[in-house]
Length: 563
Image (cartoon, rainbow, N blue to C red; front, side, top):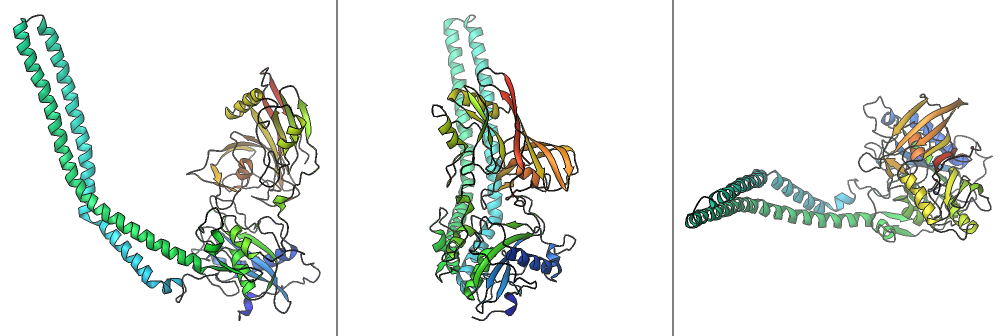
């Protein structure tokens, strides 16, 4: 198959001294290979000066994109055995789907002879339905009837409430008359009066019934108009849904992905094996699948992969300019799971237990609880693939303990203080202090940069990034309230040492509040999710103050960080 010569890029630097990796990159957790880093650096120099690309990331240019873009490089060998690399980007680049020198889309929807051209009849049918829906929704008869119906319902409620208030007043007046006249009038006269009062009561009930029937008739007449139009609208929308779903299924079936063994599967075939069963929007348009597909189509051998962010960070997620990132979970994991079949791939580090044979220090214990110093890269509770954890170790240490043992958790890469409850009552008493926020916690961290303020408060609501678990994102609509106080301890060698005082306890709260542009915009050193990987995450739960679960004595424990 012919291919534009410019897409296979030879390294401009001398790479003869760089050893090739023995296995291909595990794309969901990796340290970029030196060849990947070199390829990315060469591509980044091009991005900075490319006449079509550079303006899209220049914040002073009118054509600047609202956020940056994920780019990827795939180190390959061509059919001649020459070493080089491919470059690509996620989705579209502004209005560009295809740029010279970059791998194309796996399936171009908008090609003049492409999908929508072939499905012209169905597309026109859906557009015709949309036109009918828009016409009906804009119809003055419908809009006037909806407005009148709303008005009538409000007027009915007011009229009936006013009538009921009037009737209650008249009822009380009749009651007072009965009481007053019963002692004045003769029995015969009082009977005549009472009969008249009963007639008044019956008249009131009749008036209320007539009023209710009047408004029900008015509302029914108007509702008949809106209902007939709404039934037509609902039928059209259901027809549109069916046609759109059919078109979408054809679209998903048109996306075909190869793997190293030469086997091909469509998006539908790949995702029908997942929990989702249906592909999410834009599946298959990320940089990594595009790069792999092009390599397979041209008989290139994949050597190493890397994806990096270029440009401004989105408002909700954390993406740092030029930083490498793993492939996304929701879209790319199923696709790349198929595409990597047949390749020798690096082991998944999430399946490797970094805590194997590492001891846990118990710094204090009594009859009711214990304080342990959790090492970094050590699970608080068992994970999906790794059971070894503080919980499992404490079960062995305290075989007679009752209750859940673990009172609170620390992220796997975070070190520091954990409280272990030895019985159910102690667990309940300790956990209630976390729930009521009556205890005090202090973390120490080293930030990868210098921050200006000496202290402050960060308030950014957080939720899970459903497209890229376990990452969190800022979300003002659905996020949970999260608040952190910070205090600078030291600024040294381009780093800032800080104390964090979490007011709330959200997942990855301190890491997000440190790294996000609306927080400190300075990630914690070693944060492989929101910053740059290092020998460890430089975050440590240093101090905690709480009441003893039995004696209620105020207790403070401090474990100094090792960094």
